[in-house]
Amino acid sequence: MLIPRLFFGAIRGGSGKTLITLGITALLSEKGLRVATFKKGPDYIDAGWLSVASKQECHNLDPYLMDRENILASFYENSKKRDISIIEGNRGLFDSSHDINDSSSANLAKMLSCPFILALDCTKMTKTAAAIVLGVLNFDRDLILSGVILNNIGSHRQEITVRNAIEYHTGIKVMGAVPRLKFDPFPMRHLGVQPIYETINPPETINRISFLLRDCLDLEGLLQIARDVNDIEANINSGNFKDKDTVKDVNIGVLMDEAFQFYYPENLKSLNKAGANLIFINALKDNLPKDIHALYIGGGFPETNAPFLASNISLKNALKNSIENGLPVYAECGGLMYLGKFIEYQGQKYEMLGIIPYNFRLEEKPVGHGYSEMLIETDNIFYNAGDRLKGHEFHYSRPVAEGSGMGQTTFSGKMIRGKGFHDKRDGVIYKNVFGSYTHIHSLTHPEWADKMARAAKSFKMVK
Image 1 (spheres, one colour):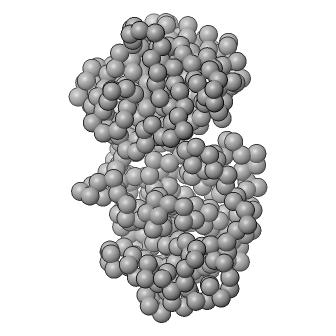
Image 2 (cartoon, one colour; image 1 turned 180 degrees about the horizontal axis):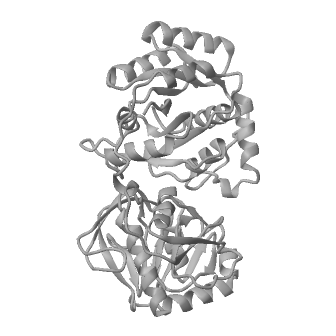
């Protein structure tokens, strides 16, 4: 299938690629084009903003988490009804988790046979910009470097000098120049850019960005590059895209609010495909709905919302009772923190569910950050002994034991890569609860949703 597409990346993080990608996505949407967006890497926050800009769900693509077949299938499936696909890279374009398994933005762009547009921070630089572009061009000749967008341009004179140097020395066309902004449209906080859930009016922020970039970019030239691509062949029967037997008539609750907002779209879709009806619950103010047969708690920011989580006593009590009665619960990172006794944040302690005999203390620097891999050593309702979970972790919280011993709580997994919960252990088990700092993607672990649906069915039958 012929899919017009562009990949935006940079030589390092903080170069402005997110600003540029969002602005271009919004401008293309304003032209009436149906834009599919993708974020390279295990990122929820940038993906959320791309969803706002495109008015469609953004999907993640990651060569570490996913094999090539699933990447192409996901790209095809989520692009086939769109006019153009936009992919945003992460970090430096050649940066990878491992030299052998190249999980870089450049490698993903090559997998997708995608034209690459380099966002280049030109702060305090003129002709040297040409040397950087030439280095990128020569470092990997298989990368389809099709254009450069200049960022943080201080004056018209600087723009002309940089533009002429790049085009003369490299033959790569400059497709736009973004001036140095007097304000940051994206307030920063721990874990990166402020999420859409904590922004008063996300569409207004996107409108402001598109207005700022409207006269800075050669949009028609970018569209021409996007359309001058080859076909892509993908196996849409791979991974989560193949038909499967489903469990019927089970309800899986999903905590979705300002505190718990990190969910890959594919994870939720895979639960639907497994036969589950998803019921979204606001943990800050809702009660537990009747007839919930399992619960999924994703990551997010329970620490900044800890006072509200602590004050919703009716939900906490209902969840504790249900868990004691065998409710299957799958909790990732922030969801894991919610299962603990207290969250300690900015000198205050806030009471959570108390299922896990640990407090979670927020540190000033990341405690765990990067790709992870866990070997499951004991069977549980979600995984079998011998399973290897590939995912990622990114958290500032540190578990601190409350009292002595783990009680009935055990660890089911050993970290092959990553920090985990404690002493290279993770996969906390209590009754039918599984909690972990590792975020998984259902394209990597398609069996996860099936097992969760079956666990929900079993709980429904004995409830």
